[in-house]
Amino acid sequence: MPQSGSDYPAQDPPGTEMAVVAESLYLANLLLIPGIAFIILLVLFRRHQKTSPPLAQSHLEQTLSASLWAGVLLVVVNLLILVLGGYGGPYTWMVVIIYFTVCHSTLILIGMLGLAKALAGKCYHYPLIGRVLPEGCRGML
Image 1: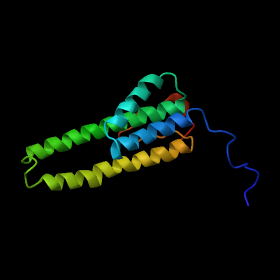
Image 2 (image 1 turned 60 degrees about the horizontal axis):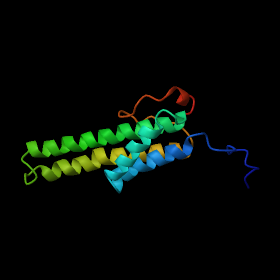
Image 3 (image 1 turned 180 degrees about the vertical axis):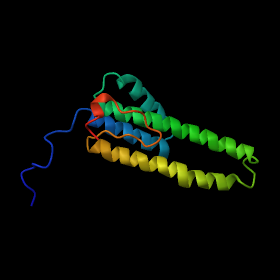
Image 4 (image 1 turned 90 degrees about the horizontal axis):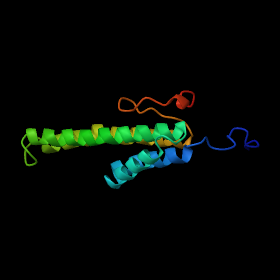
């Protein structure tokens, strides 16, 4: 039987809701509504990048950076397919399958970790593709 709630914080840290929205939009961009979710995330970032609490700011920056990297990887994969003989070439499916099993699934996994951290009210630094955390997040990892 749980105690009187002593293990739970009285309230979420400032910026938790915005952090969860940013992470959700990042995952929606990868999985459900690519492009539309990115535009919404970009608008959200532009409106709140200077005025949001450090937690929200870190998740907005991380998700925008990761979304841009996802776009770059998609362009690189398409260029690689074109170089290897076009979309009718023999290596097309090999490149597509490797991209989805390695790159795309990794981007989804780090997005899910970011969403879990946002729900917990903690900052999160995306490995390899993330941006430096703001000063206010140093103790919130």
